Length: 258
Ligand code: PTJ
Image 1 (cartoon, rainbow, N blue to C red):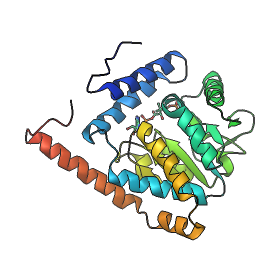
Image 2: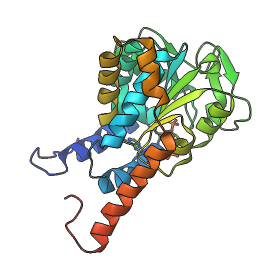
Image 3: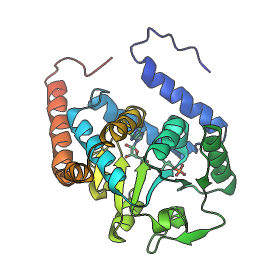
């Protein structure tokens, strides 16, 4: 691992890169995952690498949706296992949902490695799209392979850092989707029921915290939080923020960050 001085203004961002590179060497992340991270980084940079109020609103709606769902499932891919594996195990425990490995670049060995990694973080059971595999109808990528006891019968699926197809298909099947995606223009962001536009490393602790806080409220109150959320409006606010920040940069104002 390279020596990144703590005093470096981009220390956190550089450490996230290091974690992904390590996970790539361990066979958890695919090379394409490193590129996908670069796209996320660019959006994070423009958004100022902070959690915006709109993201907090989405986090509360996502927590509410996960709490009122009967069969929520936490879907895990290579990038999310590498960056927030521990936090996903914690979230799954808090909302009493199974974790399920779901990959775009499918390989049996990576499915199993990610399953083992999540278990090493304390997950009791991790569903894999291997033994009890079913297919999501209409989906051609390997993400179609899902576990019969998990995503196949879920009413709500949590996804982070995904390519667009699956969210659209899951929504068409009548399932809710909670997505974490730094790109508010993406198909995943637009198709999801609730999209948290934030870096997954900041979003996960916020989400688990919101679940803990909200759990003791009455079911009706929780439902109200979810129902008062408008995903399209929230994404439009993010797009307006991006436009404003780019305008500032275009007028040769201060750089967005170091
Ligand atoms: O492990 P696999 O095989 O399932 O593959 C995982 C990747 C990420 C390679 C796969 O899902 C993929 O190709 O994703 P995309 O289509 O590149 O989309 C990834 C989305 O995640 C993009 O919209 C990025 O902006 C966003 N993103 C990247 N890093 C982060 C992020 N969003 C939140 N936090 C991040 N750290």
